[in-house]
Length: 121
View 1 (cartoon, rainbow, N blue to C red):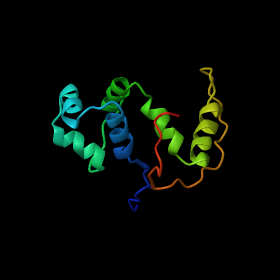
View 2 (view 1 turned 180 degrees about the horizontal axis):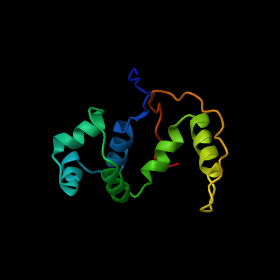
View 3 (view 1 turned 120 degrees about the vertical axis):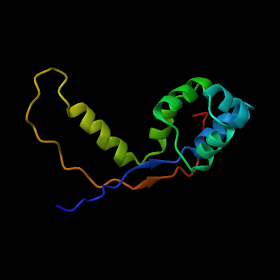
């Protein structure tokens, strides 16, 4: 059996993190110190060379006083978000799981790059 690589959605955190940091007049070094990482590591998040872990995203959300996950969802294509909501609400809330098959899943975009990021919305 051939190993088929599935497309993966990558979130470009760079602009989101940079705008959040600059809006609070903080330096990369100040944020890196709080996260216990090097300034270079934090810089790699802002330049897109690497991605923060979910734990770091949670800490950054708290530091910047914004919900980074909601902000990311805001810049995802509407049909992708709608599909996720459709799936979420199709899951039974009781322990009795039905055998209903999920609706047809569309192919998702490989990479998402927000064109414009507005932290004030």
